[in-house]
Length: 173
Image (cartoon, rainbow, N blue to C red; front, side, top):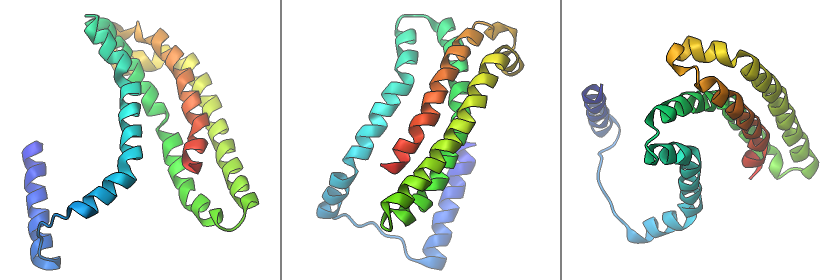
């Protein structure tokens, strides 16, 4: 897979170089300083987010609880999958929020309220369905060896509700 991807990347660069524009490498330290000055908060947020997402798994591994780490990660990855619709819907609202941002504070509030209503409507069935169907979902996806993940998933599914509810705040920033 990696070899095919590397070949595809090389062919894509070759086509771009020949048909569209000659590729070259240019380095300007002043431009990179400007980019880094603008981008450092986003990079810091990504690092903090990564630590937040995976610190529990690292701690379990550090303590030598490898089997428990597998159970936890099975439930955790499934919980992360449940918040994908929230992320996609929130991203879909960004153009609308950007458009009304300069027009009126009331319009921004109206669009944001609509986004929050969508998130609440999605969060409730996700949590309720996750709690009631946790055992069936875990057993279907992972099998009998992961029965211990059911309780973990039932707890983590409530965390997905918080992801749904804070997503409008992330988008408005």
